[in-house]
Length: 304
Image (cartoon, rainbow, N blue to C red; front, side, top):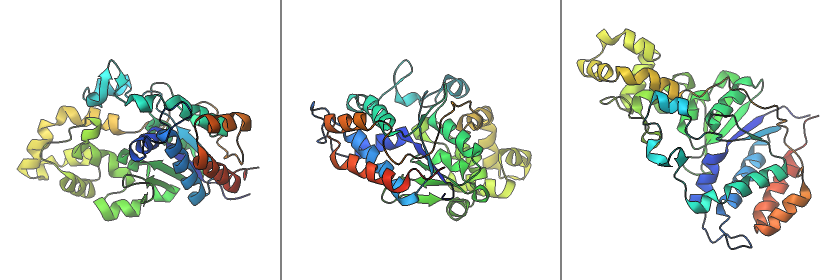
């Protein structure tokens, strides 16, 4: 039996990337686009082939903008709301999500979500529970907070593309930002993230935030040493005092989320081969189906 290793996929991050990165000329028999379905399967096949996991989870956003996070920071993802609590997503992508779930289920790749939580929280919980190495596949920098060289937890960051993905370790973070995964939440809170509606601390950019974390450890240490900071930084922190605590809670991925009991062992073949064959034909999955089947056959079924 091979040494265990888990791949945790930030599923929505990947299928959004597939949808916007591949042409909508990829069509099902019905004429509907299937670029997100095919692209996601190709991404999964690529990482399974390259990293040979024994376990996988396709982590899901059961709540893309949980009410408890919005209560803390009302601007959280507000710019991405279509109406009510519905995310603004292209109709052609929304239509593919049920096919994505059906395809993953037919393959036997476990889909794991948690009520009122995002995929980030599911990933954080599974990574924290793991007693063996974990790789997190995502385009979301917030998950850099999970990086821990001592526990062999890495992020495989696809922000520059799947083919150019980067292995994020504490050493990488030190070289890039002069911080480690443990300091990333407070760094991100100060820097801000417009894509999530987090304003950050006005007057404190990425470089200053990293310097402060490097010198004082975390936000608590920075605030405790405010008298030693420049007058400009003191003013910036004072103006953001009502933001810092709630934003820290919003950015922190929950590590103790109740999850369903799911077998994460990577299968060597589809759970429902007839259904997967039918979906392959209906959706014209072609080479994408061949590649994911080959990846499973090569890497799966290695857990006794």
